[in-house]
Image (cartoon, rainbow, N blue to C red; front, side, top):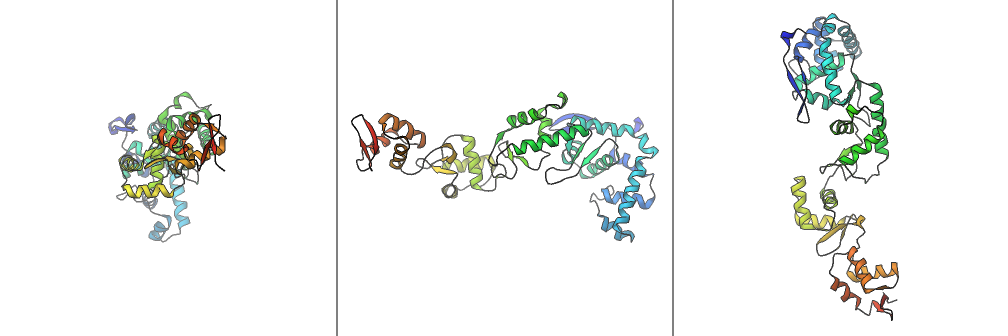
Length: 360
């Protein structure tokens, strides 16, 4: 377009200025639509939300308006788009499509439709006009939403193929319970994407690629896993408690768990309710007075004498020091509590070598 018609709009990605689009999207689409007949132009405006309303009308609704079938509306739409692509007006505005191509390249060469449109404008009407330009441009290839991925656009077929395969490989490598820190997730992904150009091997770009997948997700603590896992898609107090405890790494009192849920997730968590939910869930185990640990950490529940009994049945006769060392790894109790329980002759006996065993 002529320089006098350009206005600069900043493209922001993750809060940073990434590029500048030096055109008015509405002005460009108006020029492109000028080559159509009135009826065809009205249909395109309705289908893509380019008029006074941003709502995109269905084929059926437009067909009823003109008294034609939905299939005829589709034919008019497809013919109109192709006519615009081959028009002199589109050729004259080729620099516009070059600018959009540069934006996509800066975003990683492949980007979700949502991220792409949001990076250019947060206004729905402007986004509709940008979307229309994407549809018209020969550079841009759209992959429609499916069971695995969101709507996405790319400018490089080979790169697109690599990203899709690597995302599927990454998903298949995870178990249902896996949670991976974002730096490690990015590292794993890039290890599979060995042939990708260095210009794209940036954390911010990889995060956008990861977000293309419907099957991968990130929980509120920034950890990645399978999107349908309760560790990622937390739904209630139990799931929130699991994430809090996993992040904490050591046994924690249920009162502190409730406080952390409210602070980290901004969810109301009554202390009594939190305690009751922890009791019901096999993922958690009571290891002290009000102290809970994750079952996967290897702690033992029950009273101390039962823990000592299980230790001796598993390891055989042990010295006092050995018993204390193992029990303290399984329960949060004082050494003296272990010693007191060992002195109960109804449960344990001590041999001449100073080792304890279970009374049968």
